[in-house]
Image (cartoon, rainbow, N blue to C red; front, side, top):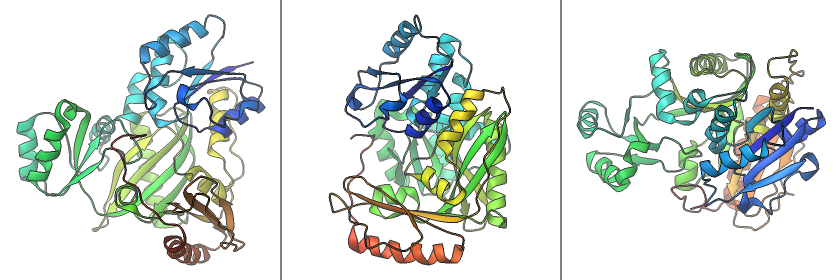
Length: 398
C-alpha cells in the first residue's frame, strides 16, 4: 500500500484524496491549523496533521521537523502539493526526505514568475518585456525603452494578489519605493492588452496527454481589482485559435521540465495577433475551472492527477474517453448571503456554486453558439441579480 502525503494550506483537492483512497492508498493530509474546522473529505483520509499558521504562512523548519518525525513511523511514498502556495513546500520536503518527484529547481520554475519568464525567454518562447525589480539603473533604462503601462507583480503569489498596474514613471517609482525591502520579490512587465487564454493540462512522462484551451471573458486582473463577473468559455479544439494556444502550451511545459502531473497556464494574444506566454503553475486551476473542464470533456483533473501520481511512471496511464462539448463558467461575489440560482433553469445548466456571498454556475452544450448565447444573457443577469465588489488585499486573507 502506497502512502501519499497531501499538503494543502487551503481547502481544496477533495477529489484527489478521494481517488487516492479509492485506489487503496494510505492518505495523510498536512494542512493549516486555521483550517481545523474545514469540511475535509475525512472518509478519504487516514490521518490529518495541522501546522500552526499565520494567514496560511508556515514556518518551513517546523514543517521539515514535523514531517521527518512522521516519517519515523510512516513510509511516505509520495508528497503532493494541492495548492500553488504549497508547491515549493512539497519540493523542499521531497529534497530533504529524498522522495521521488518535483525538486526545488523545477518547483521554482512553476512558482516564481521571474524564473519561469527567464527560462521561457531563453527557450525562444515569446513573453512580454520584463525586468527583475532589483537594480535601479536597469529599471531606469527599462522605463526609457519599454512603453508604459507596466504590471508590477509579486514573484511568488497567485490569483492576482499583489499586482499593480502603473502608467508612468512617477507611478512606477511610487510603487517600487512603497515595496521597500520587498522590491527584489517583484518583477515588472510590459502590460499587454488583448484576449487571455488558459490551458488546463495533464502531463505524463513529459508528454501532454490532455489539454483544453479556454478564453477568459474579462481578464482576471480586472475581475479581482476592478470588480467584474468572472467568465471563461472553452474553445473549439479543432479551431486554429485553440491549436495555436495548445501548441505554445506544450512548448512551455517542455521548457520548464514538468515530468508528470497537471498544469494551469495562461497566455495572451495582443491587438496585433501575437501570442505571448504569461504564466503557468503545476496545479489544478482555481476559481472552479476544474469543473469547467469536467463539464466540457468529462475529465476530472484531480482524479486523473491522483492516478498519475500513484503510477509514478510505472504501469501505463490510460486517459478516459474525452467528451467533446462546449462549456462556460460564471462566478461573482454576491450581495446575497446564499444566492438563489433557481431562475437559471435552462437545461444547459450543469453545476451551481454553493458558497456564502458568491454566485456561480457552469453551462454545458454540444452547441458553441448556444453556450455563447447563454453566457451573454446570464452575465447580464448576474450583474442585476447578484453582483457585488470587495477590495482585494495585497495577499490572501488580507
